[in-house]
Image 1 (tube, rainbow, N blue to C red):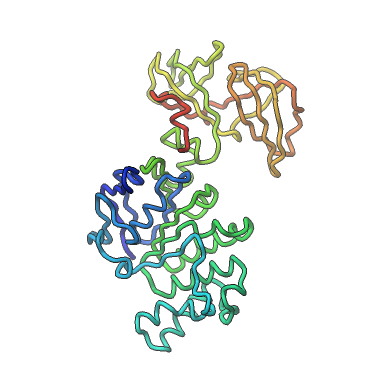
Image 2: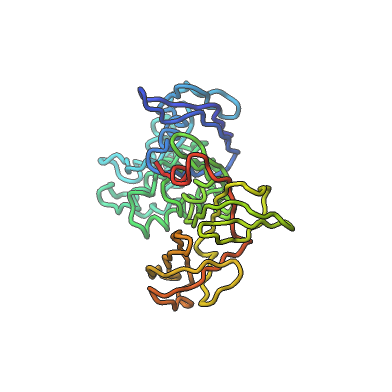
Length: 364
């Protein structure tokens, strides 16, 4: 299986820069997802890896071989597109066998490859169907079968599930993960769906405005994101601006608006440093009484989300807070007051960005 490396890859379309100095490397058998808001450059990136587009600058290497100018058909890869593309006049079996046939394999080899691929993705019983006779999920499975039957070393998935119904997307995402691992493929999967990216990937590449913001394992990106953008884009976070006023015994006291203070774990900040605190909604709790490390707040809205209820509150500092409580424990009425408790173990502290918090979190 191949090792993929991008070195200083940039791509411009006239005056528009779609990618700017992108560098990353993935290992044999790794499942990478590229995640980011619309227009961040993720589809441009995968098309450059595929050979559909040539970078304006930089190199694409496979096993240390420069393939930047190698045509797509010579890159030994399978490509599954966002818009399901099957030959409409061919049944599932003939679509799956297309690549082996183009490569000049024998009828026996074509039969073996197509049957094996269809069985792997679960469309063997529908092999005689035309694409318009299949559901959306079955059509995408047939597209996967065609990619797998090519015996490609690299599988590229460009928003492969976005055209499918929500329930089918969830089922197929796990099937994709199992398939890639069972076949020991190397896969790059582009998506704008956070749940999809986090549930299938070994590592996730976070992109913004044509650049890579952060790369990490799903648990690291969620629990310990290195950037404010990641903390905001992956999952949901509450953000509070303040200034470090005290550093003592491994902890720090941060002053917020209204002369309110929160204790946080000191991660190298000094007195006077402007900071931003981030904490996930599920890591906050509500109490009718004041406790240490709390902000008095008023509940403006509650929303049933199934296993949890999401509360939107206005804190005494003027900040909006989101708090997620298990639905079985959610018994606080809209309009009532409550203390929001901040556990220092779950508060992340960042240097306040010079361009302002709003700009640092902006998706586009």
